[in-house]
Each structure stands twice: as C-alpha cells, then as structure tokens.
Image 1 (tube, one colour):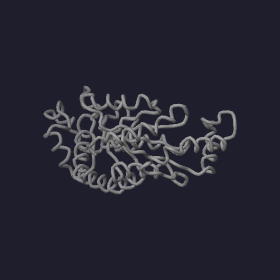
Image 2 (image 1 turned 180 degrees about the vertical axis):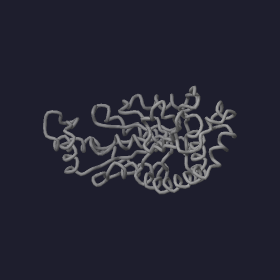
Image 3 (image 1 turned 120 degrees about the horizontal axis):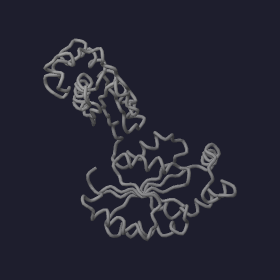
Image 4 (image 1 turned 90 degrees about the vertical axis):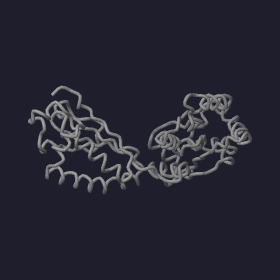
Length: 287
C-alpha cells in the first residue's frame, strides 16, 4: 500500500467512526477529524508538498457542525473530477442499536443535546443522504463488534487484515518490569554470562554472549516452547484485529540473557513473515 490514498470516513454518530479511524491510523494514515470543507483541498496540497509527502490521509466527517457538512459532498466530487480519487467509507447502523449504544454510554446525541436521541438520529440521517450516495462502501455496524468493524475497514483499504505487529522488549528485573508488556517471560534460569569475566562487559547482542546463552539445552527448550506458544496465539490476535503485541523478556540486569533471547525470538518470528520491532531497554545500563 505504497500509493497515495485519501479516505473519507462518514456516518451516523455512534456507528463506529472512532474505531474506523483508529484502524486507519494503525495502517499508517495521517488522521484528521472534522476538517472544514473549505480547508480540505488546501490541507491535501500541504500533505502532498511536505517532505517526505504524506501519502496516506484519512478525514473523518461528522455532523457536529451541519454548516460544514453541507460542503463536503461537493469537495469529494471536485477531487474525483480532478483525478484524485478519494474513497468514502460510510458507516450505517439501525436506529434501535444506536439508541441502545447511547443509553449504555450515557452520551448526548450531537444533534439532540437536550432532547430525544431518536429525533437526533433521524435528523442526522437526513443531513447525511448526499454523502451516503457518494460512498464507495457502506458498512452496517449494527451487528459488528469493534474487532469486526476494524477488520472490515482494513480489508476495504488494503485488501486483507494486517497481521499483528510484535514488539519484543528485553529488560532487567532490577530496573522494574515494562508496563507495556502483555506477555512476559523470565529467563533468569538460563546460564548467566555475567559470571564469565570475558563476557561480563559485553551484551547479548555480541556474538560471544549470544553463543554462550543459546548453546544451552535449556535455552533450546525454552525457544521451542516460545515459538509454539506464539505460533498459537498470534493468528488468534490477527483475527481479533489486534494491532500490536508487546512481549517482554527479562533477566536480572537486562544486559545479557534477555537481550540474546529477545534477538533470537525476533529472528524466529521474522522468518515466519512477522513484522517485529526489538527494543533493549536496559542493555546500556551499568551492571
């Protein structure tokens, strides 16, 4: 998806625009909410002229300002006439489901701040008629949960769901556990290079330390089980539309064993086609 893409997201309040925009942001889109129509073309020109150009832009359109809303269909028509080819994703939902959502969240409908939610929904439908007619895809979110909605939007934009990106973080328990880690593995039972004088000043990123850690039978057994576990979990996270999974690998100081294991685990996952980011949080800290 390297080509330039402009996606408008519109629909009824409560239909899931926030979820749809979050899905696009995870795909690398620059997301803007409720930009006045008279500024849209200027904004897109600035994106194209920036260095490097901003090639993926998502614009959320809502009805908080009905005066602004009136000009959006004409802007989309003009962009299409100019060959820009913006896409419009329109989110619909049945009235009963929308009313229930507002009741559950106790939020006020933007077009009926002091009145009946049903009245606000009907008024909003009338305001959105022209936009709905221009839609490239209309998604009825009445029976979709947030994960299914994300998947639907992603499939429309890139043709398939995006696999969960794995962030592997090595750390030292001495400095506390990383708050971002959703899975955490303690590798302090592995042979410790800290007690080898020639290896102590090095880190798990150095070949000698990595070899020392990885040659252990315990290490081989651990990595085999970690590969099996992640091989089971990651496809399930893919199905749920989870954008990122953070895996923490910890040893005492975060300098030797955790670094070597994190690097090897990342290499194994990449060989399976996974996008993996590796961070060694504590490897540069004094032992």
